[in-house]
Image (tube, rainbow, N blue to C red; front, side, top):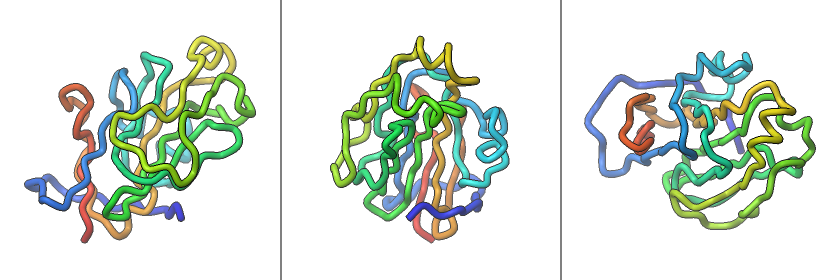
Length: 166
């Protein structure tokens, strides 16, 4: 399901089959290197970016099917139409909250559109109880795809990554 790819490509013109990965929330877009978790900052889960959350809603960064949402509700995985798997992981050590502060608005198997609310957060509670609310967004099966980005200055957080099949 969620692979551990690390491949990135250089800048290229977007192809018609490219999936556009948007920011899942309002906030400052950061490179993965700034995530205070070595699993994400080291690119071990896959290439991507992170968002320093300004709001208590996490939205689908891409249209697709929800393929993973743990009981702790701290993450969601979406498989885009072309097969790319995008993981949104809310904060650092958020699994320790065991679902407290999270309300799921989707379930495994749901078809979601980009921008649709997936998880509502009690951002105040999260800020009090976990080390960071910086939220990584990664392509977890990147080995089969070319990943362009991140474009940290993407207008409105749209098109931070482009993912296309090899």
